[in-house]
Amino acid sequence: MSKSADPASTKKTKRKRPRRYLRSRITRNLILETAQEVFLKDGYAKTTIAKISEMANVGYGTVYSHFKGKDDILGRVVDNVLEEFYSLLNIEFAPTDIKGAREIYHTILLSVFKLSEEHSSIMKVYEQALGQSEAIVAHWQGVKDYFIKNIKVSIIFAQKKGFAKEFDPVIGSKAFILLIDRFIWEVVNGKEDDVDHLADILTDMVFQGFFFEAQ
Image 1 (tube, rainbow, N blue to C red):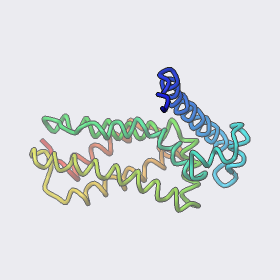
Image 2: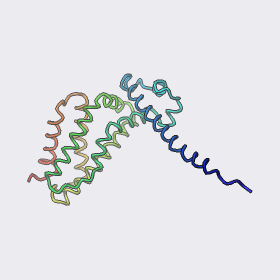
Image 3: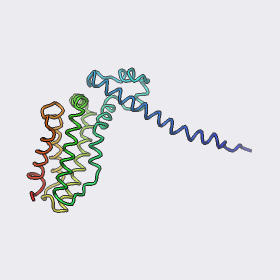
Image 4: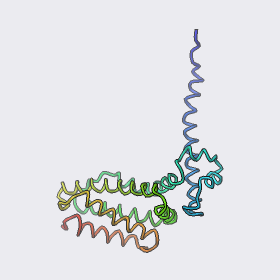
């Protein structure tokens, strides 16, 4: 006759899973935080997994159990920087008038420029990587594609509500992100130091010239 499972043992097993998960999250965050320090100190080219693992005091293999390599780590660091920006894009675009639409676009622009300014040091490292790593180029394209998809949805909504002119929303959203992409790096490199003014100007361009009828 087989013994039934010990309830206490079962509960103990169940409790272990959250703790293991928590430890994994703590280790993962430690690697990311340490990697950011190494990237800022040594730059993209000189940063290695060996340096990250040594500074984080975790095994070399442990780093690879969480990430594919240094490009994956850098991409996740930048994703963390842009988390506030992603949150803004995930808010449903549903203004009732053109004034509300303008406020939303202005908030998005100002947010991404302020984040770029605030985190310019790590963004400069990321810019270095863009010139050396196909994986980072693909990552940045993924960020831009996500932005394009969300802007396209907002344009289609505005067109249906009569706020926007009739034009191809895919081309319009791509043009918009190309504009933002250019100015992000201007901000990162200190060539545009008044992000409020920059957001105002680009919002005016979008609403008065490219996308929306002035009302």
